[in-house]
Image 1: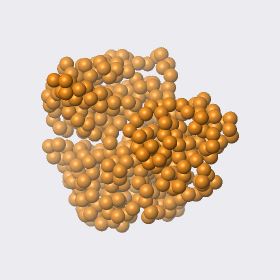
Image 2: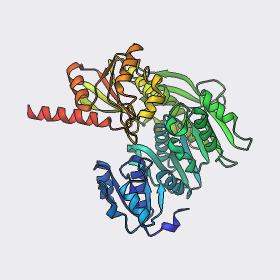
Image 3: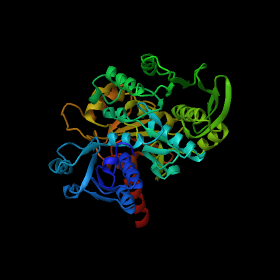
Amino acid sequence: MSGLTAFKGQRVHLVGIGGASMSGLAQMLRADGFAVSGSDSADSATLALLRDLGVDARAGHHPEMVPGAGLLVYSAAIATDDPERQAATRLHIPQMERAVLLGLLMAGYDRQVCVCGTHGKTTTTAMIAQVLSDLGADPAVHLGGSLDAIGGSVRQGSSGLFVAEACEFNRSFLHMPVSFAVLLNIEEDHLDCYGDMDQVEAAYLQFLEKLPEDGVVLALGSDERVLRVLGQLKPRARSLLLYGEQPGSDYQASGLSFDQRGMATFNVVHRNRVLCQARLSVPGRFNALHALAALAVAHHLGLDMDSAAEALAGFTGAHRRFEHTGQVRGMDLYHDYGHNPAEMRAAVDMAVLQGRRVIAVMQPHTYSRVKTLFEDYLTCTRKADITLVTDIFAAREVDPGDINSQMLVAGMREHGVHAIHTPDFDRTEAWLLEHGRPGDLVLTMGCGNINLLNDQMQRNAALLDHST
């Protein structure tokens, strides 16, 4: 409770409470005895769940909810002119960004395992959470997604161990205490807030330098940017462990192979000693590396490795991470939260392992990201048979007028990608229903609202089946 004792007994109001992180924080605050209220732009199943837990969670702007609160917490997407933030300013109610609150909650724990990197954070954090929970380590968990094995995006724990996804956007992870850092990769993203990759690497270095003298870094040994950051760490007594496929790694995935569905099997080797054999239920090479990192964490924490591997074999993924959402007219619909080219490329790589025709549906996210990573977007779905591109999801940004999805499609075609502009959900659905075939794998990708296309198609298909 360190840092939050001043607000004990008071109500905490969360603006943007429907997000995965914010809703999880609301649940943690509630479990710690705080009264909690909040608002979000639209009603959702998440708001309904929070209301069932006793949280006054409403859709829309509700500045009348702010008076009487002891603290207002807002997500990074909530601007200072938001009506509820303005009400808090007028009433002199303290305000705190989401990442600051998470850091304060984590500070009340003895040990913090923080998973950082450009992509794979949610999946790796979820893998660690499932293994530690199944093996009785009783961790507290905060995810940027939802995991059935822990009942959502958070888990209350009493062991003094906190496992969290450490997001680099807006330098959020610099608010988090850390004793064990898992560094997955460093790639181009969020240049709208960093400016260039030098500043991105500097932020990761700053995060790792928060580790105490007895802290641990577990990092991917094949990533050049990761190694460059590690090389700049000040000489201290921290433990530095590398993982990967390459011989000589502290933790190596040895004998890595894939079955016909793309599921990996490999031996976990620690300094020339085989610890266990891992057999995964999620596809792809990236997931194999994420699993290796999760098992390395379990080993460093002293858990039985055969039991850890068995627990990980039951991991079927966090929601919105290469998640199978259903079937429409014989087409299997999948969704992946990936929103930068590297993540989209990884998701397509997983899809093609199934040996089927793959139709990628890309929802580009934010104008600034598309502009800075434009060239990478042009080829990230090259392995898909067809790529449908919706209009750019603006999120927190205003259309600058100098970038659009038509430009992406034109560039993709120049690079040999079979790309088609389907601006909105209705036209994307219409294209898929007209041109899709039974057996196709349709993969929607993005962190905006593209997952709702999957819901829309299944809902419309159910209505059609019912009417006939």
